[in-house]
Image (cartoon, rainbow, N blue to C red; front, side, top):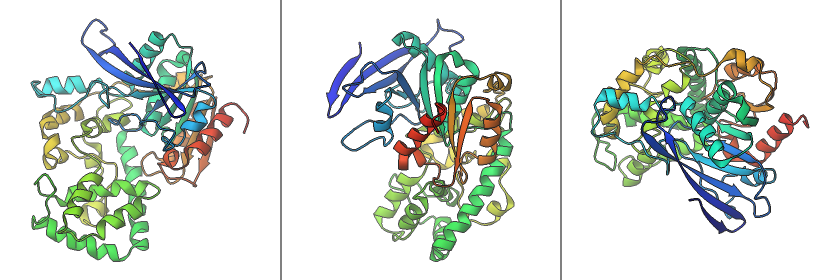
Length: 412
């Protein structure tokens, strides 16, 4: 039974849905998917906007009008009720942890059900249970990958589709994706060191200490140099250069340094899906075979001061102790032949009004591939801008969503 509570300025209704783990076999194992319905007190009958968050492996934001979180919520509630899905495996949905008691093959099979295709089938299952009309979706980052699969697989369930930093490539091999993102990260490193030239010597010194094993994280494990380089993931965000610099200016021997590094590392046991199914998000058919590892450029291989970005490597399943139980399964998933996520023919016939914010300097979703995908979809309107980094929706969500709504409705 749904639970409804009222908080300042909002009506929140909590839903739990039992959905098939494998939608191809609805009679089999079930998992829970949690969704929080958010409405303005005067808008309880407005149409739904489903928020598909970034990731994979991250839960939906927790709403509050007092703290204006998420920042696009007020604009959304003028037109919609918002449904915040905790995508399968995240938040209050049935969690994915180390999957104890399963063999690596069983773990790998289980994890194949946590891509965009399963998330979209969950959404359609939930829409049927709610008795909702076709609804609108807002996809941020990986959520945009889900939204594009929605347009390919179940366009009849959509009224509108909005994309922010999340219009993925169609028919491109993951190798092409990672080659493009490495090129962007190389430029982002150079930009960082131009802004903070003194940090280069600081990073070199830190790598010497890391090689000597003198820096340990709060849990006691040694911080490896390659794990440290993954802090570069923040360089794709609007405030990333400052966040990295303020971390590096700390004394490496201070407890605060180890705690801040641990908190900033992008891959951890808190959201194991982010690591274990990350590359498969780009697999529009075929196997990934550790694409980011295979396409690592010579510049990165030969220079430890270059930070990497949103790239997953096989060594992570030893360097991160909390990911180690999923290491053998991750090897199996790297060889798994994934089905296609997108249907170019259906996208070319798409009539669902769509609008996408494409960020020209996006370090995670390449602008060239996003524009290529946009050209496939006749109903797509694009806003190509250098005003924002990948986190534009977090930084200026009300303005961005307002413009996308206007574009989709031919008002801009």
